[in-house]
Image (cartoon, rainbow, N blue to C red; front, side, top):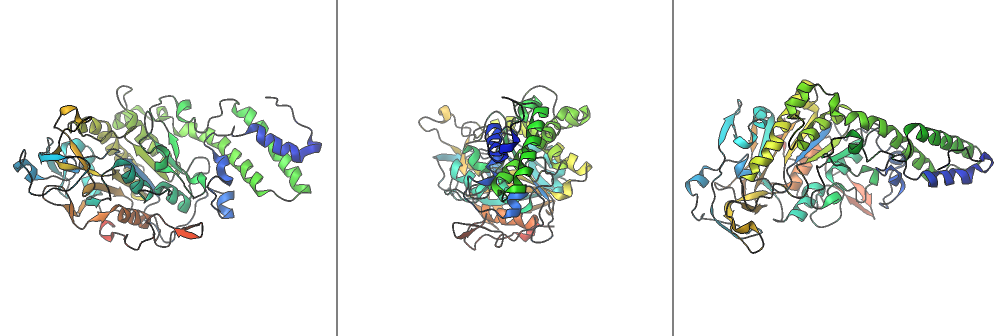
Length: 486
C-alpha cells in the first residue's frame, strides 16, 4: 500500500477513495458498522458519540455489570439449593416429577456437602466454598424459572429476553442506555475461552439496536496480549502508519467541509476509525495482566499452568471495570461445559476453574471501592433435575450419574450494587424440581437488573419498524423484585 499523499485538488473523491482503501484497518471490531447493518434509526447523538456516558431514568444503585455465565446449566441442588430430602430418597422414585428434555429415574442425592457461611448462615455447597466467603454480600434466588428445557431457546431468553425471535442482548440494551465511561474501549465485552458457546454471537447481538452496541468477543484462551486484542488490532499497519493515514483523512475532510455540505455517514465512519485507533493502545494495556503484582495474580489462581482461562477473565474484567467498561460477560467455556448429563461429579472440575476466581474478583472489587457500584450476576440458562437421567441411545454412554435439564426451578445469585446481601429469595419444592415460593421468571430478573441500573423496564424502549421494543417484552407480566434490593 502506498503512503504517498494524494493530490488534494481532488479531495472529495480522494476522501472517499482513502476511506475505501483503509477499510476497517483501524480496528476489526467493526466500529465502521456504525452507520448501518441494523436498519435501525439511531439518534444523532448516538451516532456521533456511541459510547458517551448517558444518564439513566432515575438514580441507579449500580453503574456496571459483570455476568458470570455458567453455560450449560449448573445444578442448583449441587451448588446453592440444598435438598436433604434427596439424601433420604436417594435411589427411590420421587413422589412427583415434571417433564424435562430426557427420561429421568430415581432421586439422586448430591455427592457434595453443604455448610452454612457468614452471619447470614447461607448454605452453599463445597463446590463454591471460596465464593461462599462472601455469603453476606450475596442474594441467592432459588426460585428462578424459564420456559423450555433446551439450551438454545433458554440462552436466547436469558441473554435477549426472547427464546425464539431475533432480539438485542441484555448487554446491548444496557450499553445503549448507559453508554460507556471510557471512549477508548468497547462498552460491552464478552470473554469465552477456546471458542464460543452454543448460539455463538447471537448471545450478545445488538439485533435492531445500532450495531456498535453489540458485544465484542474475546477468546480468553490466548495468553499473548496481541492475540487477546485482535478485535482492534491492525495487522497490516503499525500505529505510526495508521496515524499518518488518519491525519491525512482528517485534512481531506476539513477541506471537503469548506466547500460542500457535511456528509454525516462519512463523518461517522472517520470517527469510528479514530476510535479504533485509540482502542488499540488502550486495549493492549487493559488486557495485560502481567502488569498486576504476582500476589494479585495468585489470589485469582493464575500460576501459569493448567486451566486458568476463567481466572484470567476475572482479572481482566476487574481491569476493564476500572477503565469504565459498562457490561462484561464471562462464559465458562465453549459449547455448554456445565451440561453434565453423564457425570455430575464433573461439576467439581468446573467449580475448581471458577470458584476461586469469582471469590477473588469480589474481594478485589471491594478493596478497590468498586464493589458497591458493580452488579455481579451468577448463573446458567437453567438448572438440573433432582432425579438421575436415564441412559438414552446416543447419549450418556450408559452412565447413570448425571442430571437432565430443568427449567422449572433453578438458582441465580446476585451481589454488589444495590443487592440485599445475605439473603435467600424464593424456594423450589423439597426435591428441587420446581419453583414454588415466590417464583421469579427470567424476565423478572431482567426487570430487576434494569431497575438497579436506573431504568424503568416499561419505559426503557427502542422504536423499530413502528413498534416500541423493550428487553422485558411487550407483555405487562415482568416485574421488579424489590425484595432483592437493599
